[in-house]
Length: 127
Image (cartoon, rainbow, N blue to C red; front, top):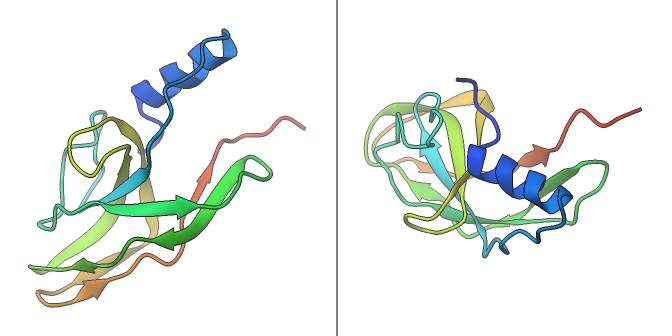
């Protein structure tokens, strides 16, 4: 399965189109992965399991962009981060989306990984 929108998120959007208001998302929390997180967002997790909150700018042109992160990740082992998953809670919660990093990041024990850019798009947009 490719990285992308979780079934939970797709169903919430489709129900919204039917007139049912989706549950409010209390926040967006980013988790690191060493490969595709899969359909449930749980495979190939990084050794660092902390989820960091992403605050996003208002939607424009079918996308939202990163405004700020709640912090960085203090890495505890050597690994290559290739993907992220986004959740609606710091632990447990609903898996919302996954994405592959544009450039994988190789880290070592003691490194700090900081996310400076994140774009979540709802594409393609009709022309």
